[in-house]
Image (cartoon, rainbow, N blue to C red; front, side, top):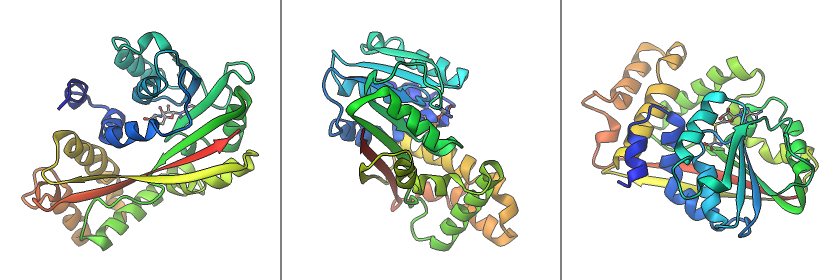
Length: 276
Ligand SMILES: C[S@@+](CC[C@H](N)C(=O)[O-])C[C@H]1O[C@@H](n2cnc3c(N)ncnc32)[C@H](O)[C@@H]1O
């Protein structure tokens, strides 16, 4: 395990674990994106700041990043993660909102927005605001994890479907008519509603198999099985189905699926890349 991964193993932040889980594939992908060397980019909704760091690495020593997030806790986490890195002096981290960006028109070459858009009720307005700050010919890159559902319980199709559907219903309590999952799938439509036309879509897969590295195991166990598929979904299950879920998904269960020597998972990440 690398040193940053060891640090992440000590964190309670599911978001940091999720970022670390995706790191190898996503860093390779960033190198392929239209992010010119020496460019200036905005990370809209930067979370714990790891993507800002990797983006700064991708655009090289003359590139600059402004990373914004409305959450003071996330900004504090991002500042903490970024502060002692070689990229720190090229990244400005500050509180900000994608729906009202405190930057002049056409002041960036690109905007990166990762797993954020589905959280914003006024997503079209946020995209228009992002378009405002990008120079003509620049890029808008929207990343959404799990536009396609991941495979995390291979061989347990019905149970995994039931968990995913219960999660959709759970989210609707917060989001109203459309779940996060439905919003993610409508990203293309949202980009078009915001006036963007040249849009390409690509999906890459994060695949892991037994024996799982400690980071993957911790992300799936803590982030997905315990939290997303945890007690909050109990009301959508009968006793027998919940017992089956617990036997496969609980860390101390003798049948824990993550401990199986034949375990594997497939986790998709989709990028919507629009030319401004
Ligand atoms: C799932 S996290 C993703 C963070 C990060 N981009 C990543 O990929 O790890 C969603 C983030 O969106 C932020 N967010 C929510 N509403 C926002 C808004 N209106 N403008 C910018 N960021 C927002 C949240 O504070 C949170 O940090």
